[in-house]
Length: 397
Image 1 (tube, rainbow, N blue to C red):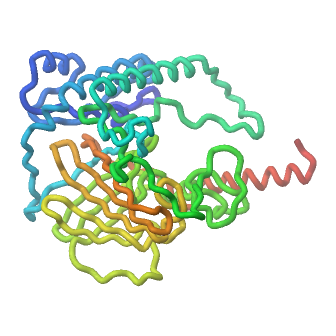
Image 2: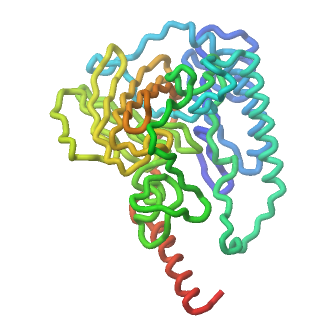
Image 3: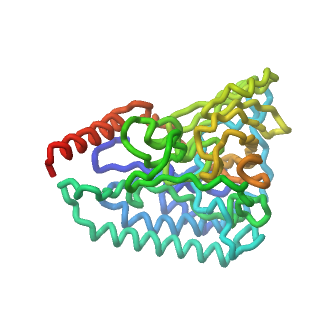
């Protein structure tokens, strides 16, 4: 595959699961028309589109793939699937998996305790996505490329819709990833645990340690910036994994006695022992916590605690100091791993939280995120602040 400055490779934005089993001839022909290679096993559709054709192709592919997913999802759900085995006889969950999603973490209140969308509601969502994409493309088409820097204090746009990952809609579409509490919403917060959030705008008033992800409280030093700006942690890798704008990829590597979880966002690896080990002392705290795993049938269960409290808690509330996280990885199809996690944090929430995020198989590899603490971006941010201070002291506008 050749690459040049006008080539974009979309390996995740429209990750789409093709259904297996007996397909009607109509769908076989339809797949062939969009250059899919028909195989008895499902796979991820990878699209290579030139920059010039991306806007015209995006909308039609989004609609087409979403409709196809709805049409074939039932066949996948009803098929009998035999989980492959590793050389150690364990369920094989290895591979690169994508957890991008169009489903909200919290359920909109209008759905009450309705866990799944009806076919009619799925169609409404597809049409809504199509309208949003068309509007975004129309706005971007009107933009004028200005080589000059923006006025002081004006934040430039970081990303357009080209960079945003959107999971396609298929059968059994959930109204939220949260399945407990039953209303699909966060439980009541413990008093005194406000939402901790930054932003891409002006710095906000606050104190160290900065626990939010993006933005900061000043530019006196790196410690005044958010955790993802410092490249300490990603904004979707957690743990737990939470779908976000981009880089929703992770890789699973297995050994008889270890389960490795490699995240693309900030390129971190959790090596989870699957054997008994001594628990860490409570005063030893880690950014990603201390994990231990075990098999529950063909499901890998990972329990993590001893978080360092330097990050906000689940959904940006409180801190993660007392959080106990239980993650479950279950391969339910050739191209799907169900990722279920439960957050228990009595210092932040009055009840536990359980969510389910399906992960789709990616026919590719993990790419280096190239973000490390103290990189040139942080240096330039602080250098720019010092220059502003000097200019102000010298009376230069």
